[in-house]
Image (tube, rainbow, N blue to C red):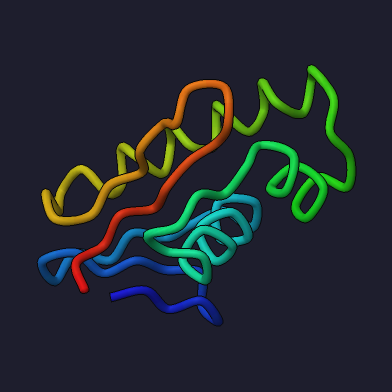
Length: 91
């Protein structure tokens, strides 16, 4: 379960608090689930601009979210090389 308002994930009854940036990113990916989210779209929406330093920051936050989500094998954030990410969740 994902509680956007309280910035928490619940995986197997475990509460995982999220930082504000993690929550913003996950909320964006969640709204676009199972569709490609380009680096440019994510960076403009969450960081306000698309540049090298923000792209590095994006990668750090995706890695952090992946660590949280790895507890549920049905949910994952996939890389699409050179384009962006797809937040995969079962239909």
